[in-house]
Amino acid sequence: MSKAIYAGILLAGTFLAPHIALAAPSCGANTGQAATGKPIKVGGIYGAAAPGDFSAASKAAGAYFKCVNANGGIKGRPIEYLVENDQWNPELAAQAAAKLVGDQKVVALVGSGSFVEMSVNAPFYRKNNVMEMASACAVSECFESSNIVSTNQGPLPSSIGAAMYAVEKLGAKNVVCIGLAIPSVGNWSCGATEKYMQSKGLKGASVLLNPASPDVNSGLLEAVASGADSILVNLPAGLANAFLAAAKEQDLRDKYSWTSSTPLYDVSVPKALGDYWNGKVYVSAELTMLDGKGPDNQNWLAVMNAYGKSTDPRDTFSQSGYLSAKYFVETLLAMDPAKLDDRGAVTAAIKAIKGKKSDMMCGPYYVGDADRHMPNHAGIMVVIKNGGFEKVRDCFQYEGPYFAPLLATEKAMGLN
Image (cartoon, rainbow, N blue to C red):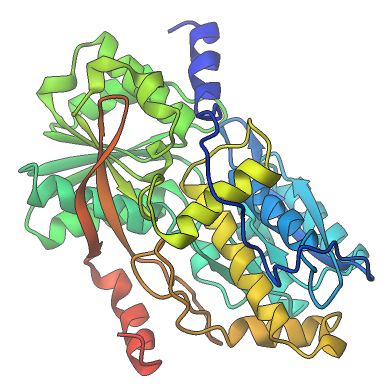
């Protein structure tokens, strides 16, 4: 595949469907009056560089905050949203956190999405008693840290959901997971799918691509050589598109069953992949349908249309960024106005979040004072079909030993 073709495919995941007519958005206090008081500083860190752009969540959070600021803000005070790009660089990620937490004195971080930021900064957030309500987490530290919680699932649950569907509905006996060789990402998530397959008495394998120079053709050859009968694509959308384009060139569609973790659930993907993959790629979605008719999903779309850019993605991570921002705003609105600049008070309020429900999530959102947080560990399955997506399985709980302590926490909190 030529570099030009690969670059075009990589960028395809960032394109956007046109606007649709929606009701006016509802945000925060919903007063219709612009907030004019002293700004409340909130941070966010995203990664946008090869191997992908994870800015969708922070863009959605930013759009929601703009809507809130136009509707009374937080007790009359606007949110000043300060966002940094770590460019998938650990050093830049550390600098971004130091700037936001140390220099700008943000009270929390909201809508973050990165492959590296959480791995680097998790101890820093704990030391500084600041919470990050992330939205596009991909690393284990994001879900196994005291001061980070995310509305998205991350690649481990999402991939297990895909593997479960491959086994239960597509008859897979041997699943190979295609991931990225990033610490706490590929080995963590694809490794969990292998353990899931083993728990079922079946076979699993992993093929991890070099994120600095991902060779999809070599990865495809390695997947074929693994002896698998099912291929699970656990890659950022643009790179996943490139991998499937390589499989198309080899006409491998009907030789395997094909599943994917959440990144392929993007409105731009069906067109980018074309008719060849129609009805053949099943995607594990961390949140509910992008065109869902529930109030939160409709409001997310209305917020993006009114306060986002036409080029901002409308994907799962955008949904997640909206939810993180919404829950954060609801938390601040319930606080004593005198404590809105008190980082410790904001952190305590976030940790007290319990049992929030949305038509966009399959289960309740909660935080709690714990050393790990993964409130979202159930999802739906969709198939790429007729230029869009069709739901083929409604909300289902993922299986595996990884989720046992999470379920125990939820039981203790009266959430299941």
